[in-house]
Length: 113
Length: 114
Image 1 (tube, each protein chain N blue to C red):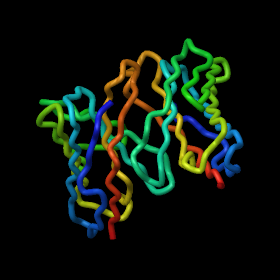
Image 2 (tube, one colour; image 1 turned 120 degrees about the vertical axis):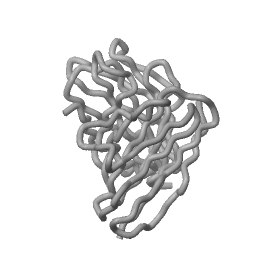
Image 3 (cartoon, rainbow over the protein chains, first blue to last red; image 1 turned 90 degrees about the vertical axis):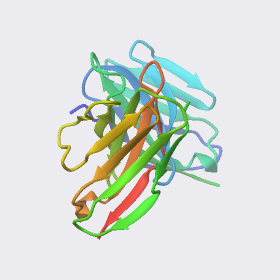
């Protein structure tokens, strides 16, 4: 299965600290995306990194991709209580549709004020 | 980006009944999808809703259980038929508008089957 695995499953930090979440996947991909979900609501797209990219930034977010290890990390710097949410990585299989996504199991991030 | 609404936001249904979930988008989109998120789990793609033709279902999902309509480029429905408690989940629709597979999600419909 293509399904990604995030670790840790849960992460609790203090406001102002950095949070790092990891994602591993099993087969070659076109792109890898990260999404945020607040308390069982809809998902919000955060960032997409292509298979030929190694690092990407967006505001306080930094994503890295290591295709040789089939892994990605999401770093949130200077975390805020509002960052409390579940974070999912999603991949699409190389050669397949960019829109057919397989989601990982997610990391529940709690940022304590 | 796209603004997506879903109705109902939540429902409690009895075993053996059916529920139709609506998804409305504020602009015309080609790619529209339905996902299921079981309690405490990740998202699983149910099907791609194709405008003017039958939906494309993923492995493990069948049209008799999850019939989907897509009458135009801004609207789709998903019906959960003959429900059982195992169907209790959040059901989400999404649309694809980016060049590389980015998707925008509706707020979800939380379904509880008793």
